[in-house]
Image: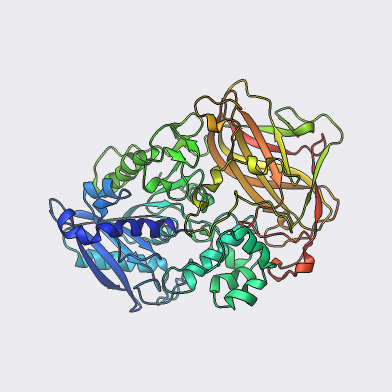
Length: 604
C-alpha cells in the first residue's frame, strides 16, 4: 500500500537544502498538539511572496515528512505550488517523529466517547491549529494524497473541519479483505502482506525484511505453511500479521475497517483517482466512489481513472507503463488540467468549476473520455462464452456437455510475474509494472487454460463493469480461481515489432472458492460437484482494436502474491500443515447448462 508517497518524499529531499534560496516557499517544522496531548510532527511550506491569502493543502502520511522538499520543486505538486498554497505535510501518530502509537488503518472512534481519537479527529485538530497559528490563510483547506495518504484523506473527510472544502483521495484502500492490499475476495496476498506488515511495524520507520536471497518465489515456497511465519520469523511481534491469522474470514474486524462501514454521504467535494493497472489499490478508489455516489445528493462526488500503476499520475509523463505505450503524456494532463484545476476552483474560486462526473483515459484508442456517470449508463452487457478447442465467442454454447481440465499442484504454483520475483520494494524490483507483463510466460503451462476469439474484424469498446462467471468443479474441497482478460496483439505489429503477439492483461482477479456462498461463513466445496463462481473483475475503459484478439486465461495459483490454497478445506488456512497441501484436478464447464463466460459492458 502505499509506498509511493515515501518515494515521492525521498525524491524531494535533494532540494531540501536549497529551499531557502531556490524555492518560492519558506519551510518550518513544528509539533502540533492533538486534543489528547499527543504532538504530531508537521512540515509547513508557506509562499515567500504573500500576494494573497492562501488556502491549506494537507497531506498526512506514515512514511516520514522531515525530508520533504519544497512543493514547487516536486512534479506532483508543482502546478498547485505555482498557483500558491500553504502546503502541510504531517507524520501520523506513532510514525517517524510523531508521538503516540501507530495502528494500521486505525479504527474510527466511538463518538459518544468525547476523549476518543482517530485519524479524523487528528485531521480536525490539525486544521484548527493551522487556522490559528499560520498567518495569511484564507480560511479554506484541502487534502490530497496517494494510497495510505489517500486513506487518511478519506478519514479527514468523514467528520470534516468546517474549513475543509475539497479533497482528492488517490488510490485509497477501501477494503483490505475484499479487494485491496492484503486480500482479494478472501485470497490472501502473501508476499505483499508479509513484506508490508514488516516494513511498517518492525520499527517506527520503514524497514525491509532481510530475505537473504533474490528470487522470492523460492523463499516463499520454502517458507511452507503460513503458520511458519510466526514460528520462524515474526514471533507474534507484528500486529498486522497477527490480525491476518486471527481473522481469515470477512468478520467484524475487516468490515469495521472498510470504508463501506465508515462512509455515509460526501460531506466535502471529493475527487477519487484510480490507475487501471494499480498493483496495490485499484479496487479502493472505485469502491469509495461507488459508496459515496449512492448518497450524493449535492453532486460532490467525482472520479478520474487513467493508464497508471499505483500513483503513476504523480510524476513523469505517463505515456508508457512497462512495455505498453499510450501515445500521449497523461501525467501532466492530470497534474495541471485536473488536480490543479480542482483545488484552484474549490479553494481559491478560480476557473469555471466545469468538472465531468467521470474522466477516464480510454486505452486502446488512447484518448480521454468524459461521462455523466460511472459506469456509463449507455453501456450494454454482452457475454463472451468459453467454447471447445480454446475458442471464445459471443455465441452461447450449443453442446450439452463440454469441459476443460487441469491439475493444480501447490508444490509447483504458477508465478504471478516473470522470475526472478524481487522483494516488493527492494532494489531492482519490477513489482510496479507486473500487471502489464506479457502473459505468454504462462500461456502454455498445463495448469493454465486459455480461450481466445478469432481475429477481431471491428473495434470492441469495453467501458464499465466486468464479471467472470465460472461453472467449475474440483476433486479437492477448496480451490482458487484466477481469471485474466487479455488483449492479444497481432503477430505482426509493425508499429512496434517487439509487441507482436503480446498478451496484455486488461483485467484480472482471484476468488477463493470457500467463499462462493458467503464471505463471512466459508464452506468446503463438495468434490466433483459443479458450482458457480461470480468473480468481480472491476471496471475498465479499453478498446480491443480490429486485428487484435480477446483472450481469457484461468488458473488456480498466482504465487507468491497469493498464498497457496491447500486445496483441502482447512477452517483457517493460517493454521494449515504441510501435509494438508494436495494436488487437485479442476474442471471448467462450457455447455448449455453450465455456460462459463465473461460479462462485458460494451458501448457501440
